[in-house]
Image (cartoon, rainbow, N blue to C red; front, side):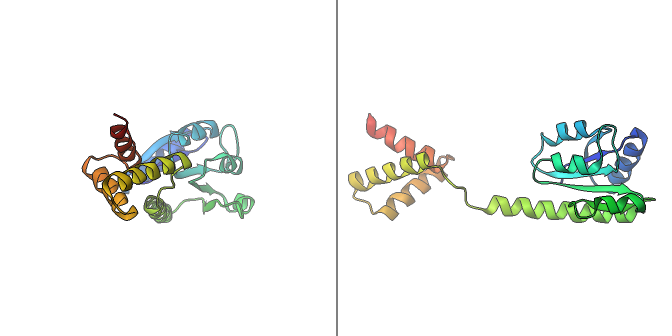
Length: 182
């Protein structure tokens, strides 16, 4: 589920948008009236969707969009006249007066895209730093020397013990090295 933040200069507008979203199965993390509030909440999340009016109490939507952390997308609900000001900025525009189904479909699509993006990021192999690689290589070398294992067997040994003990590979390698130091 996406982290949704609703931001409008008028609190009653923000609450009515929140209610529409909640009635349609979305969870709203925060309701704000200023860009500063949005930025404060967005720092607590890795990604999310901002639904905003064109002008907030302290900035316009384009300024807010430029200051959002990476991973956030923005939907601006505004008049046809102001919509032309946000084209080309990476902001999705919805014309007021609002059609509820357009808002729900747009947020649903954006939410699905963010879920897909999160899954993709999780499936990427983790990149280890040089220090961690050195620890793993030392542990493998020790296993190869002491137990007459091949490099592949030593790696499998570390992997298996890592899974059995619910530790990561580096922690397991550190344990192997610590046992040797005794």
